[in-house]
Each structure stands twice: as structure tokens, then as C-alpha cells.
Length: 196
Image 1 (cartoon, rainbow, N blue to C red):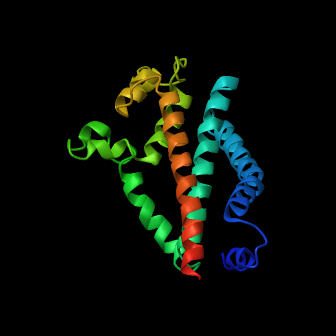
Image 2 (image 1 turned 45 degrees about the vertical axis):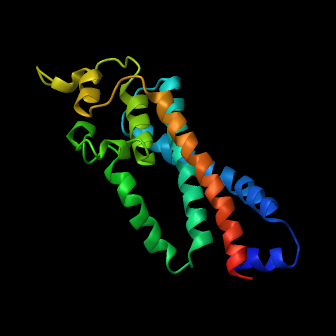
């Protein structure tokens, strides 16, 4: 951030030029890292080799990677490098708690249920589950005589997720990404104001 402030004061570039160039320069690296990890994870976990499922799974991973990168850039713009590694994990805990992974939606008290709608982890988790087990997936293989979770609809029921909400999850992540881009731009402006 010190380099950005110094170069901006020297009139090398505007805030918007830095903002867009940083996003464009970092995007291919983020996307390649997410793609490599996602492909390994998807196939090593024994998922179906269906192109639409792989693309849906990759889409959620790519959106969440993008969101995470912008979140990290915001933390780097607002806080010193020594403080950011402590602020970021602490600030994501509420979103993680209301994602539906630790506490199911129907187990929450009514006053906390609206918080699930603003949890970006919810949209990521639900999108991955929908891509993996939703959209009329065939029955899971099972060597036992009776398997309760052979039908993927039972998995969605156990997680208290409505079927076919994939595009809602994509839209939720996209809204979060757009919001965080605005916050990033404003935080760069704020950083310049602090360093006058």
C-alpha cells in the first residue's frame, strides 16, 4: 500500500487506474489457482464426471475465490500488514457461523435467520452442495443393504436446503463481489486521505 500511496502522490496514476489494473492483473492468477485446486478436489473426492456439474462446481469456486481475493485486498488497504492476518479471520467468523454448515437453518432462532441471507459462506456452501448433489443427480453408490443417503434428495433434506437454488447462490455471490469492489475502491480513497 505504501507504494500505491507514494506513486499516487507523484501523479503516476489515478485511484481508478490502480484499482482496475490491480484487479485485471491478479484475476488470471486467482482463476488458475482456483481451477487447479478445484479440479483436483472434485475428481479426488469421486464426484460424477458430468461436464455441467464440473462447470457448476468450478463456477462457485471461482466466484468464492474472487470474493476472497477482494476481501483480502480490502483488508490490505485498510489495515497495516501486521494486523491484517488477525482481522480477516476474526471478521469472517460470523459469516461462517450462519452459513448452514455448523448450524442448520431450521435450528436457528427466528431473529438470527435473516443473517443467513447476508452470509457469503452460505451462498458458497449451498452452491457447492447444489452442484454436487442437486439437479436430479443419480443415486449414490452404496455397498450396504440399506443406505438412507443413497438418494441425494435425502442429503439436501438433511442439510435443510431447497433443491435447485444454484442460480440464487450464484447471484448472492455476485452481489457480494460487486459490493466488495465498491468497498475496495472506497478503502483505497480512504487510505489516500489518511496519508495526506
